[in-house]
Figure 1 (tube, rainbow, N blue to C red):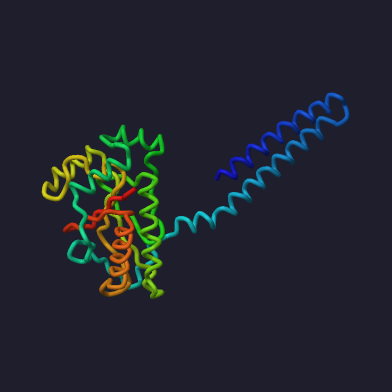
Figure 2 (figure 1 turned 90 degrees about the vertical axis):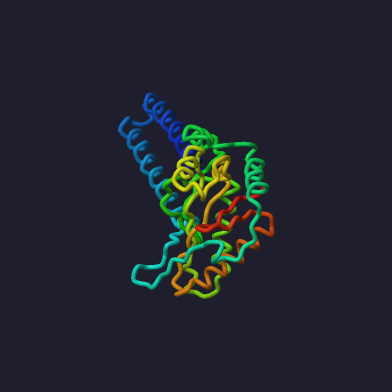
Length: 260
């Protein structure tokens, strides 16, 4: 989009200069007013054609960058498997001493208290939108929004890409994991704690720093999800060892906090 914007500005400047030039010529009677208007009109049509062509050329890139991940058709056999501490063999990073301090450190204390502060951080681009991308989908977000810090978004996209790359069986490359919770304000966190008092962090959750997300299911065409679950487990473990993420397997999901 940046190239298109620059092109638009250049065409506008040239168009303005051309208009001034034609007006001067018309007053000097070197060209008729009808021809001047016709030249400006034809130039405008040319500019519109150029911009439409550039926008159309960018469409394949956008599809490649944000592919449709839910490629398993309704007519195909598909299975949803839970991602929990019992279904994935993962090493737990201590939540109070690692997840929470890390979230605070890598965001320089940026904290989302309420909707107003979320909007503030989005305007400052400390939080950016997250779309479904290669290897993962996003469920309906009742108590969170699809935003992360730029670093956390990068880690999530990397996780999805590496997950897909790990799967060798062609049909199973349609598998994707589902993210159920992303960035929450402190207000939303309190609402969750009121509803699920034994399954939440009441104070300063990594979700309220914009650097955490939960993985709760994996969708696969394999009858038992083994191939996809093994791939997800391997990639999560690798990125954990590389110091890119912290993991906290739970009874209903796998909580992931991004590292610096």
